Length: 258
Image (cartoon, rainbow, N blue to C red):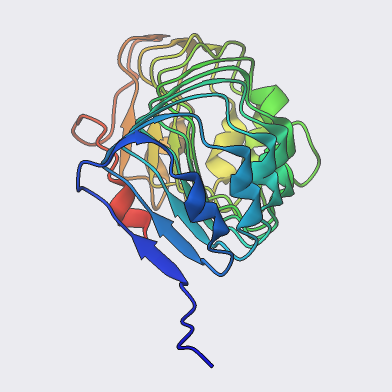
């Protein structure tokens, strides 16, 4: 018999690959990791991506990919890490992503996604990191966390730089594992509910550049783990102050790679 070797990992990043996503890659059925980030890939992700049933990590960030995400991405039942940041994807975030039971990290930052963030994502029991910042998303936080027991493992939630409206729902206190919450640069309004103090692991809270008003719950300033809270660009009552030194949000997907 010939020397047959199974390809389980393919990493061809930062080598200036130009052109459409290479469909023949989807014939490597044993792939568990596909990393083609920081190239010049264009066009859509082909529907054939659904063939890669064993894929755990898909990293396509920092390309020029575009169009809508294929629904077939929901067939990647082994996927734990999905990195699609810094592309030109458009359309709605597909609900099919909620069909990925092993998904832990979902990076959709800096694209052109529109519509509402699917509340169905809240059913992902293992999801720890959700980043949909810097898109064209609408809707409310209340809609996103509308399902009972949603986002049970979520630690980091980035909703910044979109067009979200409505208030800061008290129900967010149910996300008891939440550590980082970025809401900067939206159109959110109303008051900050006292229930936020019941997020026991909260370390970073970014409320800046919205339309919030009223008082900051005094107990937040005594939160044992809260290290930074930014509130500029709102209409909070006199006496409200930030915690920590404001800094530019810099997302390095590599920090979350395994």
